[in-house]
Image (cartoon, rainbow, N blue to C red):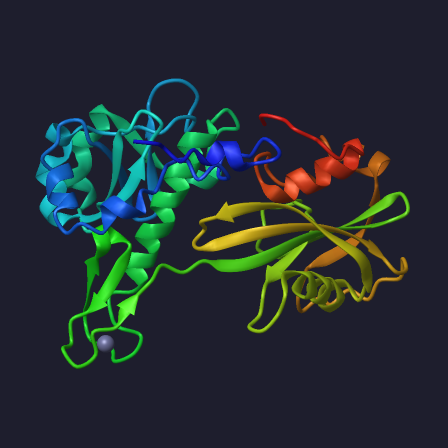
Length: 321
Ligand SMILES: [Zn+2]
């Protein structure tokens, strides 16, 4: 059987959340027998998620590699878990997500022998694209299940279907099918001559500055949303908006669409209801961040990639960070 390898479709080397990681195998997941077969197959790789935390290996750097579990080590949790077929890797191995959020922490102690639960946002930069993207996928779809226990049409209880990729309303005269949702968001590097526009939200880590971002509103193109966000937050009109990269951002359910653009002028009118501050920075000023009061976003984020692109003035900035 051919395996669809998402890695091969990217024109630039993707980041840790960008690969999509698995052949999602839409054909197999339609079978109502699939989960039962996978839950009795000792080769199945189980991907645990617990209350939005992913399961990492205890070996190597902290939070640097995914840990999958064999059936015999998770069988005690199956009855309590939401079960989602994620797809197959390049070796044809099936990956099944187990949402263990209903399990009390004390009961999870046997899993301590195999790995540790942690926040994917804190993953080490050495994490592989496959591991990061599979964990991001698992985290996002678990969140969707948790948020859709009731029908958005009639309010009745829903049940998982299509191997965990739909939810169906149980009420006979409704029967609505709910599909997983992703929220598009835009993030935009705005430059003016030799400066880049950086800002910060009040609830971000102390001293962190980043390019501006926001959600796409109904009836809006991403380009429009990007220009609107910059105007709303910093009072700057932009031109030459160019799409660069995307990055799934499953915290909890976003897809980040990254753009570059140029400001019409350097004048700012910062809206402090939207951002705590925003301002123009030269490369030299950013070079002095280290050890000072400011810092850039974590490596592996699309925000950092857009900033690093500009810092290095390279159109094909390609790194395994
Ligand atoms: Zn319904």
